[in-house]
Structure formats: structure tokens, C-alpha cells
Image 1 (cartoon, rainbow, N blue to C red):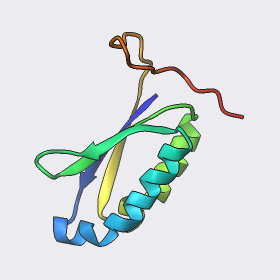
Image 2: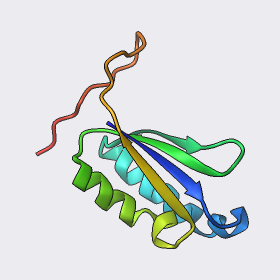
Image 3: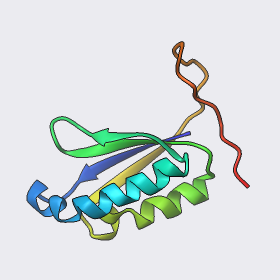
Image 4: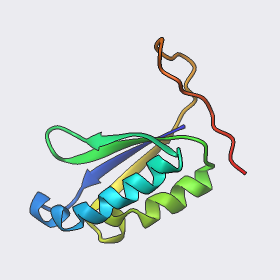
Length: 98
């Protein structure tokens, strides 16, 4: 699993220019089961995405294609981890991909 920590490097009104494209990016990877949670940080300095079922090389390619990154509006810190302890009712597992 990965935590993608987006940090805005431009003013929010500039970042907003890519918001619609960013939502489409999120929806694509959520539909594919790769992103399992995503949302803005508060205060609004960026966002967090939790991803699963891909390799580090794949996540790096996904991050490079992220609209906020491509347009120079944000940087991303990628942290890989293995979920060992999970709250009851939360279904987190390494998803196998072809």
C-alpha cells in the first residue's frame, strides 16, 4: 500500500484550475480499485490518497501523470507500507493485479 501526500506549491486559486481534471484522475483510479481513499488536507495545503495493488514503479507513473503534479501545482511524497493492523469492518488487503 502507499500513502500519497500531495503538497500544494501554488496558491489555491491556481490549484483550482486543475480541480476538474484531478477529480477525473481520482475517479479513474478509484474505479480501478487502486485508490481506496482520497481527500483534501485541512488546512487546505494539499491532499492524501491511499493506494493499493500496484508496484512502486506503477505508483510513480500514476503520480507523474497526476494533474496537480503535471501542471506544477503540487509535489508528492510517496510512502509505502504494509497494513498489518486493521480496524474491524475495514477490508484492506493487497490486491493482485495482472
